[in-house]
Image (cartoon, rainbow, N blue to C red; front, side, top):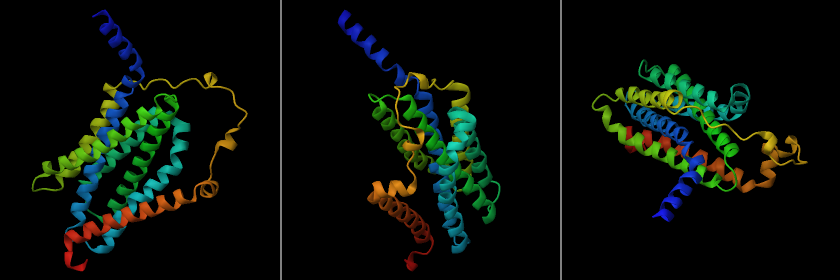
Length: 256
């Protein structure tokens, strides 16, 4: 009995670093759920015969464009506001942009809102992954990133489950998505508590490698891993085309 209690106590102590990041994981799951629901709601709206193909293309192009901008700007935001405040800032932007979809159906406005949505989600993912990478050590980094990927995947799953809550009024889906994202923001700010402190840079082993040598530009990365660059580009292109054709097939199946 004593041995069992000792083992449980040892396991609980060993899992402490994993337990303290649960609020972050939960917030990511909430935001990912809302974003998944928002993406489906937009697709359902664009499949309406009243939406022309050009408007559809414009709206669908906004998200990856904003996502690209977020990838480029995320570092500057983290340097300015740190990981925790940047995470909450972009979660707030995502929630406000999602609420905007329920207020109007004008294509220029939707383009701007979807642009903000793509920017915010890219920044949120980069902030979370960057923080996990700095917080983890070689022994548990794989565990943290596995949990992170599990939360994003569950978000996609839960988002599709929530589609049925919209009922005969699909515009209600935008409100549900916005409320879900806002829940993740509120949980992160008022319920989950402060993020665990990152390890001090002074505690890291000294190295002769300068920060400039650690950076990988696009050209250098292409030389080191050309297949990866091509594969990622093709995957993004394929996903975008599949998404566009899926929307079109719902409305004009005989054209495809």
